[in-house]
Image 1: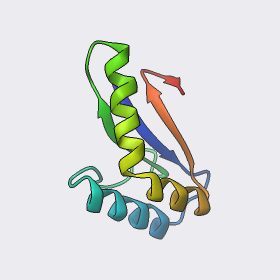
Image 2 (image 1 turned 90 degrees about the horizontal axis):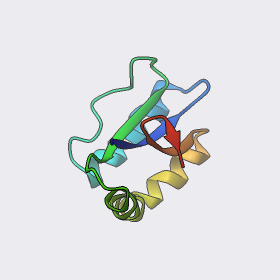
Image 3 (image 1 turned 180 degrees about the vertical axis):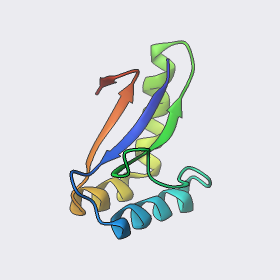
Length: 89
């Protein structure tokens, strides 16, 4: 399994992506190196372990680390989700 924290905008400004990505990098260095292929979202790694319990624990840690960035991204119009192989939670 593979879990990411995904930030998606319907129509983002490049500044919003850079702002959120820069804040994420300040907390988790190297987590953002540009938008995803579609150009209007970004994602950071959360977990790639086999057990669901490890994904839940890792998600709790990441959410605690980047909580302020989540709020900022929402203010900038992003929808923020955890995504594990296409299953969003």
